[in-house]
Structure formats: C-alpha cells, structure tokens
Image (cartoon, rainbow, N blue to C red; front, side, top):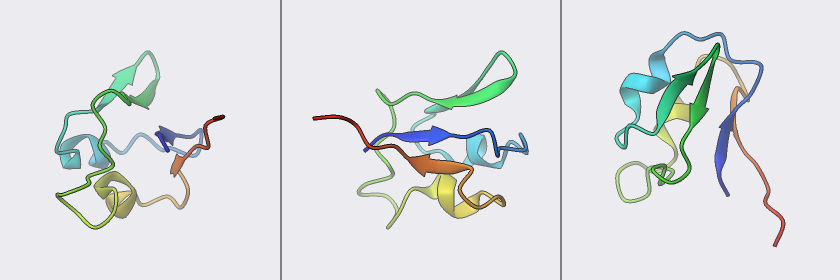
Length: 67
C-alpha cells in the first residue's frame, strides 16, 4: 500500500532527511511521497522510517488501493 502525507503534517521537514530513497519532496505548500521511489523502507528498516520519525500521529499513513 502506498504512503501519503496527510493534512495533519506540520511541515517539520524531519521525514525528508530520513527517507533513504529521496521519495519525499515539497510540492507547492505541502509534502508528497513519490510512490515510484518509496519502498516503505523494506530491506532497510523494520517499518517506514518517515512514519517512525514523524512527531504527528497519522500524518503519514498507508492508503488502501482498489484492486
């Protein structure tokens, strides 16, 4: 499931530096995750590092995709 950054984000920039794939960037006035680059940190961390370092609960979350 892809990750998204929600409106709860306070734009603290912590996730940008912590992403090992450079998948997080600022688009206009909000952060986005490039799901082509995001691997959810598989093989690097036990869970997505952006979620781990984010100070706001559920500001970065997985979205369910329709199959």
